[in-house]
Length: 146
Image 1: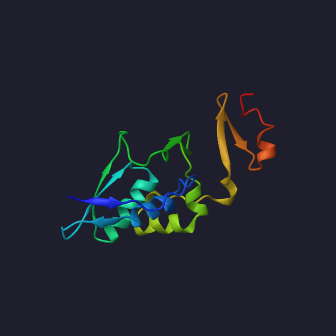
Image 2: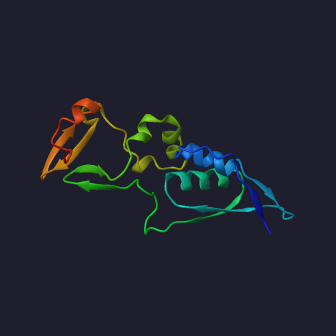
Image 3: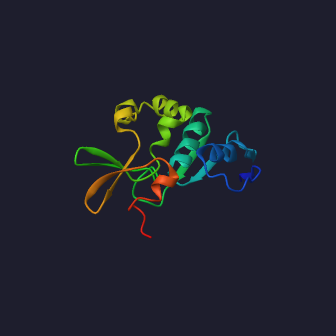
């Protein structure tokens, strides 16, 4: 029977790096030659953990409640534009995540943000509006419901 000693809990860390810290920080107490890790959630953190475990030769199972992989990270094409349903722009701002995508062979589906289209555009009242990157300027737009 496998038993795991949990890694040190650090409240407030909800990143893929934190998930990997938690998975990598576990130690298996078993008489078996290898342990089997159960990963709850197929979002970026769970899938990153699975990839790291695979690289280390550790057996794992990923359980996802939704009908798709990726968690909050989803994309759809809307009138010729790629619309992100989650925090997708972070991948181009974090070289580690971009390199992970390259290592996974995802070049064909990864889209770097181009300077002429950088930033966020939001569909509001059936119109595409550029969202200001400055928090102060953003709160003065009609994009908020207050």
